[in-house]
Amino acid sequence: MLSSAFPFFLQELPGARVVDGASNRLTSPRAIFLLALNAGSDVTSPLPVSLSFLTSCGKQRTSSDPASPETKREVSAAAAINSPPKLRPESEFLKSGRNKTTTTKKKTESLEETLKKKIYSVMPPTGTIFYNDVSEVGGTKRFPTSQSTGSALSELPLKMAEDSHEDSPVEGIALKRRVGLLSGVALIVGTMIGSGIFVSPKGVLLRSGSVGLSLIVWAGCGILSLLGALCYAELGTMITKSGAEYSYMMDAFGPLPAFLFSWVSVLVLKPSMMAIICLSLAEYVIEPLHVGCRPDVVSVKLVAALSIGIITYINCLSVKLATRIQNFFTAAKLLAIAIIVVGGSFKLMQGHTEHLATGFEGSHATFSDIATAFYSGLWAYDGWNNLNYVTEELKNPYVNLPLAIAIGIPLVTMCYVCVNISYITVMSSAELLASEAVAVTWGHRVLGVLSFVMPISVALSTFGAGNGSCFTGGRLCYVAAREGHLVDILSYLHIRRLTPSPALIFNAVLAICMIIPGDIGSLIDFFSFTAWLFYGATFLALIVMRRTKSELRRPYKVPIGIAYVVLLISVYLVVAPIVQDPQIEYLYASMFVLSGFFVYIPFVHYKLSLNGMGKLTVFFQLLLEVAPTKYVPD
Image (cartoon, rainbow, N blue to C red; front, side, top):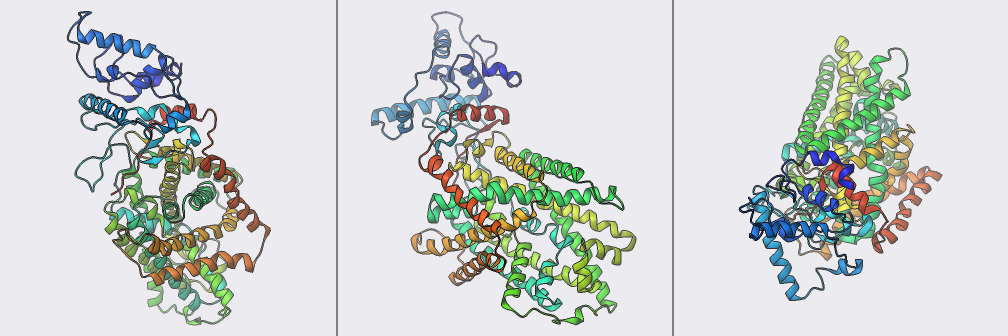
């Protein structure tokens, strides 16, 4: 029996009513499930719990007479539980809800209403939803990648999620809008500003060749990022689903391009970015303990894995806690940047302008060099689209999404330009290029005995960037699974905390696996062009939907010329690194993207199911206390 394998679940159900009358109320959905399992039902089939048993939950006994209605209901419940379920063929089961007669529909609706009334008396603060056809939940087709049609808990009472835009609650478990404007700005700024600006902001200077041209490139990259984000603002206010590029390509081009994006991002880009952020964090945490020598590689990897675990636990525990931590660490990194800017300003006022006075000396005038300088700068601005991954959790997205973008990206641009001016005020171009940790070198020259502030600032900045990366990466995995492009368990939410804990844990496991080999920088380099490939596809989706879906409401509308400009830039950023430095690794990365076809065709298009995935889904539902979800549109 599965219930005997999970005694801790039974211990958590002191108020659950059983047939022999140990108590009087049913307070947990898992009680129904465990009772059904003890009756010998198949865990991959719908629960054989009769209506009489469910509707008797929460009522007090009124008579011990064998002929009384209450006693008859007890006998009916016991007989229903001890009898095996009558299973229909899979094809018939999948078609249920579509080919029913009018009489059957009325009967089902009547049972549904009766069930709701009774369970409302047990769970009055939340209400319930009862799925009759579990192959279609919340209007979304559930591809049977993980045998979702047999997930037993999908027929249990689910907690109601309340949408802040609606006066009445919405049935079903769903994400809640708990991210405000401040948290939205902190998510953009905190994920864009990682460790790069503190450790090695020298790629732009190296490729541009001069101080003056490098500052122009930094400012230009900020403007281009803002233009791209404005296009995403229109898409995010028009399509209020989370998932950013995935959701927009799904609506514009269909499931195949969206699946390929999730295939690359969920399995490679998102976990690898989180892994490299946490490796940088680990190096700065370990370095003070290894004065005069390089940190031990194993220690760095262990601290990085621990960091991923802590960040994931925070995000699984509470959305509010994760956003508050993001706000705190974003404020901390902005304070560190303010220290660098103020310190550089004092040096300028003291007359240290010799390095800035070099101006445009040594500039690389070729178009190719300038383009590669922009390429390096734009990667420092990566993260400008992260708020679009959590649109379903953003309060008043029609206002806060464009406003957060308009505040966050110019703020980051100003920080980047001012920090680079401060660096160049204190160090020459050659010294900056030779430094392994630019902010630490700057701190030794300007702050003196307080130079320890800089390593601490780098550690805080990387932790905040890792938290933001985990927050958004988990949402992409969650949305893709909700559409049936990943196993269903990844689309489930915790029944009380309403966090996508399975998706967050899956992202963390992949990130820890990427830490083991250690050298993942080259992996990111060779897959980086794919990110701009999908950015370009998203800009193209905006242009296409201006024609194909012109009737959709657009609270914010970007000038269409901006979309064409950023589309052309995206195409160039995909082609440029391959043409300038062709390597076999780019071919491997392209082959990995195309390999997604071999997964999509059998498991998504033809809906091939894997044996045993239904039982595995139920196991993780019980272990993680998660339940199926539904998308709640505005």
